[in-house]
Length: 296
Length: 296
Image (cartoon, rainbow over all chains, first blue to last red; front, side):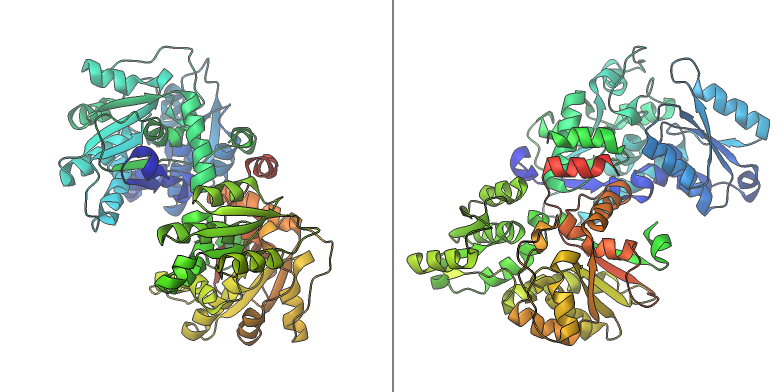
């Protein structure tokens, strides 16, 4: 069905099926695994709306590292519960009035702990890229290498990691970041050639993609390797969540469905001959999901 | 999480991700592929509450065979739409007052077409068994072969096909059918040593498992190869659908979740050292799914 809609073979990388329900475990594990025994003993601090939180918490548990995570008080319940289940300590903050990075760095100073950023870190970026390494391995036998690769984009760590490996193996594949329209900082920054911030006071149903601006490191990678940035409306993201329910039998959160939304809406430039779509996560609360699905 | 709940490694075979959203494509394709060109030219007739319907319709389209499917008027919309999308002709009947087999055989006589039964056929049974062949292949590298294998059971075709291959490769693995409590004809028949019918006028949320009695062929296989039959309440099936939403990020219909429900409820006899669970399908309508998920 997707092939018919998109007019070419479509391949899905379903990271909602990944440990912790999103790709974030990859980068977090890679970062923690690279720490020395001394560093691990000091514990870690991270901030996250929920997917990185769970990734860090799960990796910390596996590696016996003490983890404190700064999360917005209005984060999805599923993400808070998930983070807590892995044994991390959660410190809540108010998204409107407090700065999560300040809180995190304050905690780290107090505890002599190590900050694990959610995207702007070479180990995190490389870890997220392992997803694309698997895609390339899985599609080795295919007659035609997909010429388009789409992934959701918040701070840009996932797409930067994927672009690094995809561009080195599939030289002709065009790589696009996909963002919610109101948070299309990477798309606008790529077009402008410099890092631009999102307006204040905006919101989106894509709670995992609400970054203020592209990361320093991630933008350096992305401006060299991406063909451009795409953006979709919240409505299109929800339609993609519904499509995934109805036809893919996968639970995908709106943030995780934006790349699928771009493909369903025919936003991929040119005439694609094959598209890889990353479904980056599936951590969504029962009530909002149930409302989205009821109208599928 | 499942390993923790069940106290041993658990492996899921997610047939909701199969073409047509359930395992039924396997048997249908195998049956149609075995037909001669002359037989295919005559067209086929089948009856089904929806998953076999879609499996037959999809296989018929691939093999250019004309297909008519007898479906209950109250079948889930998702299953009716799916069957229609593959190009099959649908003939509706009233589950209370009409007999679907009579209608199907009547149509077949009229059109000189071939009846494709939903479970009581060696090709169908063998086709469904390919699922277990994949499980065995996938787990070749595991240190310990799972000693329990659970699959949902309506007429018994899926479990008979799986049992045939599992018992030949994994000699010590105990194989269990899982049914809704009100339709536990296979469990009761296995215990009695003869085929018993379900009571009339009962119902279950597991719309794909409402068989009247075990098949003749399937029961012959199952009474030799199964360790027994398990049964779960509708409530337990729904709890398993919710678990699959929340933790597996998979859309599973209640019928497809009964084996998972049995494992979650600790119904597997003995002390399992490893469990394979078949999630047999994910074709559920938006409104009932949304109601189930809202309380997850």
